[in-house]
Image (tube, rainbow, N blue to C red; front, side, top):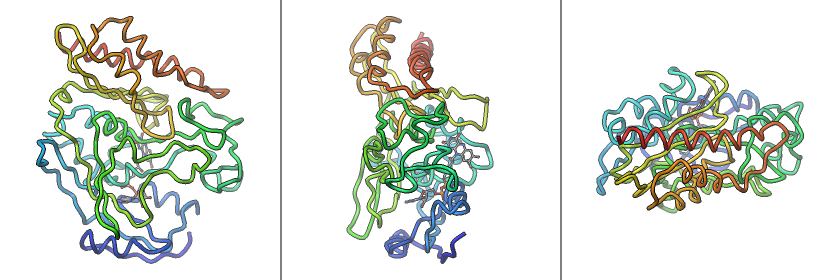
Length: 328
Ligand SMILES: Cc1cc2nc3c(=O)[nH]c(=O)nc-3n(C[C@H](O)[C@H](O)[C@H](O)COP(=O)(O)OP(=O)(O)OC[C@H]3O[C@@H](n4cnc5c(N)ncnc54)[C@H](O)[C@@H]3O)c2cc1C
């Protein structure tokens, strides 16, 4: 491991000051960053411990919730208000990792965790444009069962691994960030980039910006939301495909609906096309299938993952049916 300095921030401004230097990185739960440092994929020269900052869950001015970046994943999933008003978020977190990891992992770290593409981790044996820009991508022609089917590029077919982020994308979460030049907010759906020609640039955060909190807007029908993760093992496995959804069903119609997919793209994938076909329409099996078909119409499978296209369509149908049945 490359030698590094360690400091513990005592306030957000202190963290910004310490973090705004070349080679510095935030250290939260460390469950992803420390692994990457051990593999010499990440080589920060300075770590700024942010676990003492912004660890509360509070009501926002608009009636939603503000969740501090340092709140542990398990604390979010166990929070009674989150469970009642945003059940998809609690379910998504509980579908991820293990209890021990969720107890360590934080909201900020979960959002900024890096891909689990095995070629990204295989420093000595594989080419990876995300790890070494311009090197090439061995996943393209390699073992790519877990990889992306939507929004990928010839440079990178990695997926974003977070379950929590899929629920946040569906819930229109807003990321509050702060850096040397001040504060700003970014919709979670716009925080992460698709890979394009520069897969090493993963988010629109500037080098000095920290995530301070996540805001969940008030959304009455988020109470009718859920998250389903399809994976190879019942626990401790990343998603092949996952779906987060919320539906406001009245008189058998989708008055409103939110839908996002995980395990399919370089970022949490908000299913805007499917939503627009469903919104205002009578909820039938045929309509749901057509919406799922439309969302997956541009999918580009690799050698080993064509199955994800049908799996995603069926998981969308299953999740929306669950929400419809729970209304009856
Ligand atoms: C065995 C294993 C299985 C797993 N399975 C799953 C799974 O099924 N589903 C899933 O979703 N996840 C899974 N994970 C990933 C896990 O959820 C992440 O490792 C965790 O959420 C990262 O959070 P952390 O606080 O430990 O982040 P860290 O490792 O501390 O940091 C991760 C990144 O975020 C940055 N960062 C942290 N906080 C901030 C902040 N406030 N502002 C700016 N940057 C910040 C760090 O600099 C670093 O780049 C698994 C991990 C392991 C090890």
